[in-house]
Length: 199
Image (cartoon, rainbow, N blue to C red):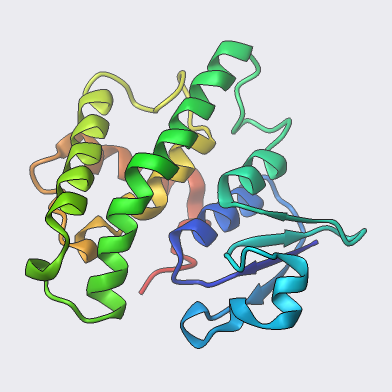
């Protein structure tokens, strides 16, 4: 299989972490979104929405959206709970991550790190929503080691990706000790895959 991704993207990092964790063999096809690589006719023929990451199976079938790709790659692994309600809770966090977390923290990071904007230029509403997302995570992790059940799941992978870069978007994790402890557990659990998209 082939994974198309930009190494500076948290959404791509998620897929890389899962693929490595479950021991899959794949080719990594770099896609530089800042250079327009995801807008070429060749890329759009596989992934019409022009987003990364993208997964192409050996038989040619393609799958987009990071959480859908993670869900597919992690099937039957320790990253997906066996009990159906816990699977639903995992999906609950996956949907929340894409709706309430990533659009705020990831966008602030992109504007500051890649567009060179100062923290003061961030959209106040987006900042407030990002802070609220981190506050909810801190509240949850104050009473649990992981987001679902007793072990790491792809819900943790999804939330790890942009949370560990939150500082690059102007968000302070200093007063959030539960998140910082959880990030350490994630790094230990997921291993070398977490280093793929480091600065």
